[in-house]
Image 1 (tube, rainbow, N blue to C red):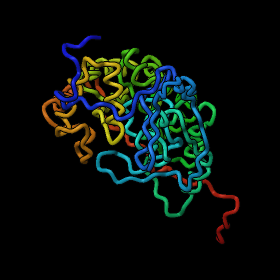
Image 2 (tube, helix red, strand yellow; image 1 turned 30 degrees about the vertical axis):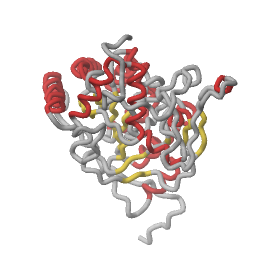
Image 3 (cartoon, rainbow, N blue to C red; image 1 turned 180 degrees about the vertical axis):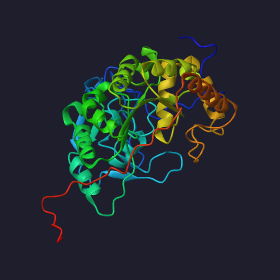
Length: 376
């Protein structure tokens, strides 16, 4: 698509040339990121370049590689005032869905890997997750509160079909009568509808589907291996019909790209059976900023300046502001407008009439066979 004038870094401070050259489209087919810069903690950087002998043509495509990670604990704690939970579980590290905007991408640097294509192709699973969870829930000092799953990487990403981490985790939570809240972009959550239905009957489970757009072309470009918008709405309907409390997350909201869809997404989700809704403004921490700008420049060059300009107007002039109270919703007139539109739409549709609180009073660790019997 032609532009009114050529993009010029010297004249436009919003345009920052990518540090990492883009990877050949054939090598990254079906992936979200455009590049694969070395992790920020690495002393050496690897940069592909053509030496004139067409050596880049010999590089293989990025294939999904999965390896086991030896975890010491499975429940992660946090004290953030911006979120409604203080503990979570991440069965996987990295996510094959390949959402280019994913704020979890920088965590791959702790594995010595790139937040780019490595994040969506070099994945880790925690085979002892269920056993660790049972051990931690059985501790005499443990006090139950809702465990959130899917707040970092998607627990129902494609490799879950093979490794079944979530199925094992849910079986443990059901035995312990422990509350759980799940966030996903995958219709695979319907596989576990039997467990979730039994837990929901006791007030122990609820699910939220993230629906970013109803435009299949945009979804394909932005979230290449996640379920289509239609499949996500079908998952909402399936969960609702099974009596499982289900909500929708219009997240992330990206100005001048998908913010015009807020009302339509909420309409469709409410019609499918969603009773709660939430939203989060686009977050671009660390490497995600450059990755998103690379993607935006490639797929929507005509909107590049406008998207970043509006986003920065809500982030204090920066790509991202991590300040508590601001990082989720932003600030300024445009952020205020998004918030009011969301409130009006949810009120019109009857969403968020009540915030379902999951029960913790039913929590009861199963008695272990080797436990010492009571004297009386």
